[in-house]
Image (cartoon, rainbow, N blue to C red):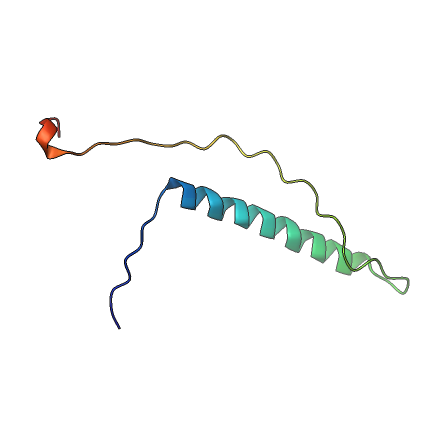
Length: 71
């Protein structure tokens, strides 16, 4: 084993949040389809609902440079 260096930022969090929202919508749709399918069945592939408009991302800019003197 060793160390894994990971660079993480606000955009990564925003992307993961959006992926989570899409997966929840997909699984909800799959659950509804399986509950609705009876002897007649439904089409295998359906168009997912449009994703909700997410609020604008908040990006925080910080500076912790000790040379500036304001720390």
